[in-house]
Image (cartoon, rainbow, N blue to C red):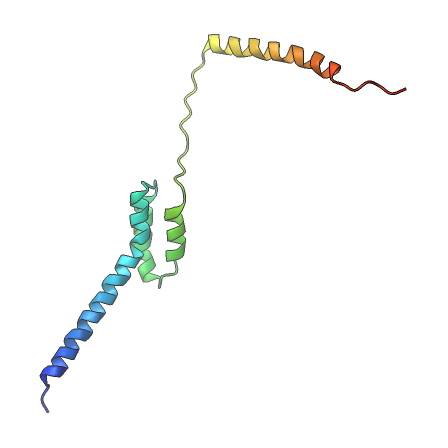
Length: 115
């Protein structure tokens, strides 16, 4: 029994279909990485590695990676403390000025006592 041209054609279609499925899954798992790259996410390298790990965990990590990539960028703020004597004196003076009038205003806004 020999193989026909139709059988070779079907085998070619089957191999191409399988290859397209594999490439489609790899592309699908790369979506969170592409989103993180577009948003300049601070963890884009970690998301990229986790996308590849998700291929080997039967897609269990993928929804979490998608949410992680879509989360807003959260970078810790850099706090630089400059100790300015003039600024500290000015703030202390403003605090003193604000604490004085509020006590007198609160006393005048009080409702009159009923007899």
